[in-house]
Amino acid sequence: MAKARAIVKRRKAVRNIRKITKTMQMIATAKFQKSLKRAVGTKPFTTKVRELVRELAASVGEVEHPLLRRPGADEQTNRIALVVITSNRGLAGAYNGSILRMSNHFIRDQLAARKTIDLYVVGKKGISFFNFQKRPITRRLEAQDMPRFVDVERIAQHFIDEFIAGKVDSVHVAYMNFISAGQQKAEIMTLLPLAGIAEAAKTAKPDAALHEETIYDFMPSAKELLDELLPQTVKAAMFQAFLDSTTSEHVSRMIAMKSATDNADKIQKALTMQYNRARQSQITTELSEIMGGVEAMKG
Image (cartoon, rainbow, N blue to C red):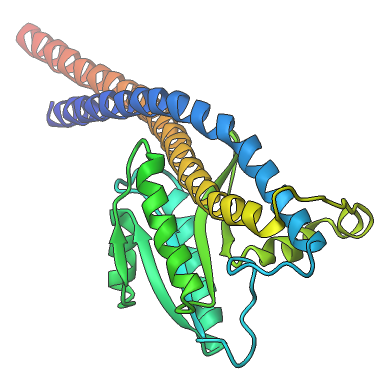
């Protein structure tokens, strides 16, 4: 009887866990649907603007802009800024782990190249990780389920000011790029300098970068247009990184909680079968004892 009771208690615990994971799955699904519309809706604009900036950076040539500059050897501070976007909560599968492993690898490479890292961390999971690694964090940033452009704009403006003032040589963002509901990829995006976009595009698509060339006429001047366009490009790219990260977090948690719910169902069924066997064995034993008692009375 004791074994059957233990199985009943365990089955009840599994059933309660299943209710929790199912609820979390439903919440993550609702958040994912809402976040998906924002991420997918803004991505074509962000991608096209960055492509335009890449072409401009390659075509304007003689026009100089602070956000397009690449510090020379005598101008370098050997200091770079890295923004790591993680979540406040766990139970999201490999979401946080993938970003943090890639960020840690990037940091080691930069330190090996004698660079100094200014580390900006978004989310409690990232802060806990780097505290455990004993890496100094320059600034802790708050992670939100629904990022607002006005908040991200302030962060991006801070990095623009730091870069223009020559305090950092480059700014990078480690985040989870949302490609589709079934595919998310941890990436490190070079936010500044924007001249790095052209080099990245040549690496990714060498033929297109070499053969496709557009000549632009500027009215008003190229500098006036770039003064307006380039800061907006940086802000839009960072906002897109936040949107992609949030959407990837929700879909990762949705998938993880679905797997947990399915596993709870399997365990519950297995425990039910174990309970039936234990109960059947107990009944058989009781019947054998009664029959033995009856035979003893007859004797």
